Image 1 (cartoon, rainbow, N blue to C red):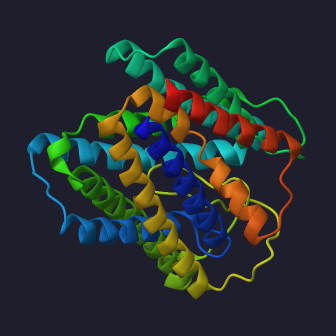
Image 2: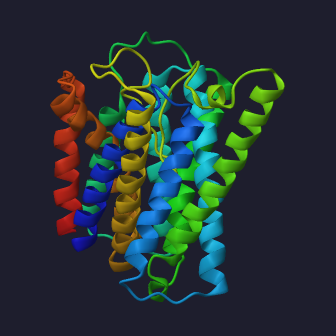
Length: 317
């Protein structure tokens, strides 16, 4: 199934974007990384849209605005729940919910059906999501009710993003994504402006409002987040200029992922695409292994293997 291949590639691009966003967030505030990524993604969409057809309708613009708002909500809830911790539990929980919510919508609201092999593939994919997103080495503690609620809320928002863009018409091209990314840019820009005003009123420089402090974790405008490099040292020295470049790259990769996912939704089922999209941490893990020479845990290798297996099963379903 072509949509399964698109979803898997989209997940890899999402994970790659998160990797760059995570590195950028070691130097810049997370919301700044998100804003730069949103703006660069918007520019990339605008350039591509020149060469493809797209019909502007009020409905598709409305869906685009909704997707942009949901993406920001997803990031805010995700940052909050990961700050509470533990990541090793809340991260996979968020990813699983982000997969299950649109899967259930596709199966029960849209009436999508799969073969027996397809349903088994969904189960394998969910197991892979948990294993790939698991962060080994963290002390296991019971998560708070507040953290769990925020993780579930974030997962629902990420899943909601997929449900929303699935409602857009094929004739709209990339217009819903352009509107959504524009909404991201405006919202995050307003938030950053408020941080700058607060910093200046406190006698600090405007640039101080842009620097990373406290809980550093990079994310993408569509609500995904880099967890592998949220804490701990990295092997690269990140300057502010480098961080900006990384954030721009994050936005372009995230925009590419969104385009692939949108195409996958238009040629295939929401159920299949959502299950495979939730495997986005695989891209982050693989890049960390190649670029930073970080060790991939055994449980994550199992997850990666199951992810490929699930992709093959859903492609054949």
